[in-house]
Image 1 (cartoon, one colour):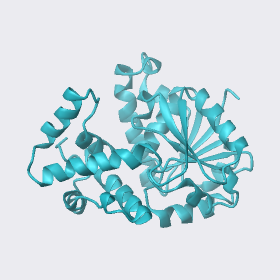
Image 2: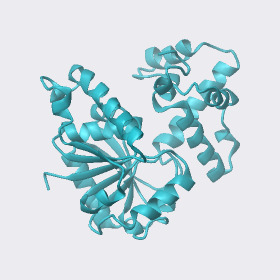
Image 3: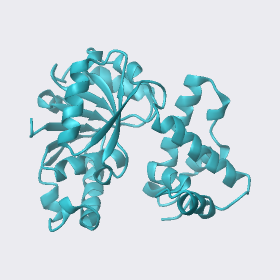
Image 4: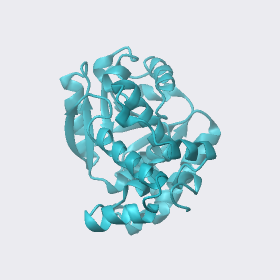
Length: 283
């Protein structure tokens, strides 16, 4: 199984990054979007990534952007899922949207396929309950930018079958990824911890304790982190961070997950981070 047929459902920041990484490794990828305008936006994101990827990835060196994307096609038709081995869902962190999508995808996804939820915080078992064959559903948390990250968090739901887990790990190995397997739970390990980290950093800004660059400098220069918490929030998208914290708060009913009011105001103002040109920083 060296050649995979992959579908990425939702070509936003992380979805486009994932599709690019798969294409860079010679895999055939279909990016499924809600409309033609979204398909074009996804293509533009990937072309932009391809333009600077040679600076960071040996796989991209000496290759033209159009050459790197030769194995990618875009579609608005879920029927294209029918021959895919590996389907990765990347739509926004909204449980109603995901439920509607999973119900629709169940009509087309082949019984042998792995349906991977690249969700931030919604439990995999919950997402599996929306799919006719919950044993097919597993969580795979890709980090952004995907082509520069060599390890993923894999989340096994209560109904995820051993066959799905094993096939998923095999496919990830073919994509050059190491896997850390964890049990299901809201936020899993990475986001259950990292979103508290970003949220508390936002509270430090709101309380006037420090400027964003100073907060991030402490974590980069004192602790050796590659990115600070506020840079990370801008990269992920402040709206995505807020939505994920809302899921954690609703699920745990624990006040430690309450969203910093500053971040909610930033979302209302459209200051969503890198994708909007402004967040905690200006781009």
